[in-house]
Length: 159
Image (cartoon, rainbow, N blue to C red; front, side, top):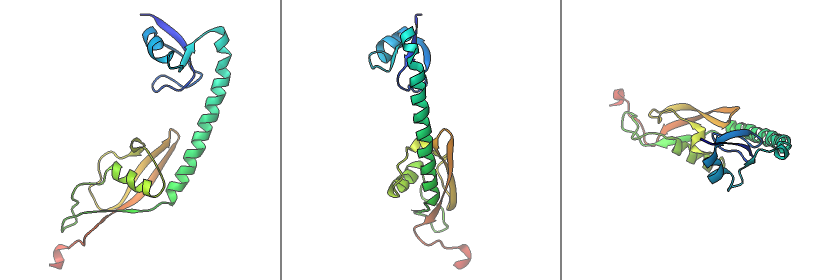
């Protein structure tokens, strides 16, 4: 199999960031990376671009991290409750999912991708809940919210 050495001009998921030297199969380079101007063949002239691309990457990553940190501080200030339908004993009908949390955050002016919310399983209990939100590879926030019942809960001893 033919292998091509390329210099990435833009980040490619699973391959590398701008300024990285990568070895890929010739077909991938010829049919995808080169026509879209995502990469250029690695030559002596292109090797000089590496430093400028890497410095641009460092600036972009620093900016993204500072923006993520600002968003993390903003998230710490937000508190809300998600009202859910429950049965007479407080058992939830359904569950609270990442989409529900994402929607409530959007109502508060925070737009996140559902993949950023670390919810291992849907929430099926009432009370204070904590989930992890990954804003940046180096910025992880523990976000707290409350799940409450829309209707009053009757206790067995109140009958």
